[in-house]
Amino acid sequence: MSSIDLNQAATLKIAEHQYPVITAYELGLLLFSLIVEGSIRGQELRLRTKVPEQRHYRQVLNFFTSYGVLKEIRGVPSKTVFSILGKDEDTPAEPIVCRVDPFAYLSHLSAMEFYGLTDRISQTLYASSPGQTEWKSYAGEKMEKDLGKAKSAYFLSDFPKLTRTRMRKIRQKTISIFYRRHLGAFRSIKSTGVRVSTIGRTFLDMLREPDLCGGIRHVLAIYKESASDNLQLIVDDIDKHGSNIDKVRAGYVLTELVGIEHPTVVTWKRFAQRGGSRKLYAKNDYSANYSADWCLSLNVD
Image 1 (cartoon, one colour):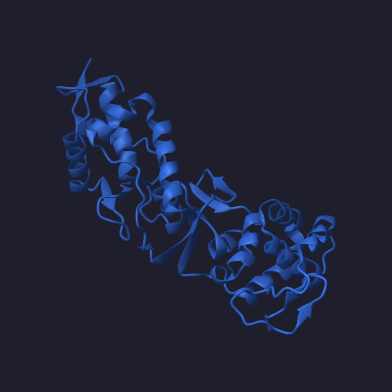
Image 2 (cartoon, rainbow, N blue to C red):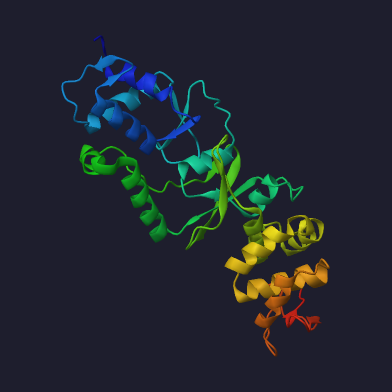
């Protein structure tokens, strides 16, 4: 059997990577499996040991960055995320964010852009991701799945672990992450690696966090224009995941503002609180303009 050195073998291995960007953790997984297997494409790896060590990772990373195989991406901490030579270095911010944070997905105004619900082109990329405690738990589960019985050996090698990476500005877009206690409903686009909140969840987020969706007036305009086309998806998500106030606000918007009749939406009236002081838009002052059916102050001009 012919032999090959680690740098050459790693070059062959990274050429098989599906996406145009790679994180330090993904590179660590790639090198770890390569060293443990001890060969690639019928060629034996020239190493004195099959035990991965941190020096192996540093050696390959230095080789890749020195020869331009990997190039650091601006907007994230040093040596955490890289674009791969020959794999479209002009990759937009959206798939990069979804690679850097494996639990993040496009949401709010960015999801609205994705679905063509808004004509606004934002210089901010909005994404949702679990809170720190939940994120660590998800990361632990993912490393367990990725490594299986080799997890202990991987940790002993001191190769990069899956950790949350700060993202500030990528590809000229400011990154705004909304942290959630629980993952929302999203879908994955395999061809691009992008994850995005479902249409139903996007409409729910519009009412929950309108300031992240172009403002409350823009949200109400989108409901008027597009809610009818996506009605069942909206109703299903709000009915299953919406809080009482979410259902009251959505009920008012869908029935009185959009003019839609739906049997499930009608049942949400039971969540209206007589004599209460609920507002359509939480941040505006209370208005005397009022929906009697939904017991809701209509405090948006």
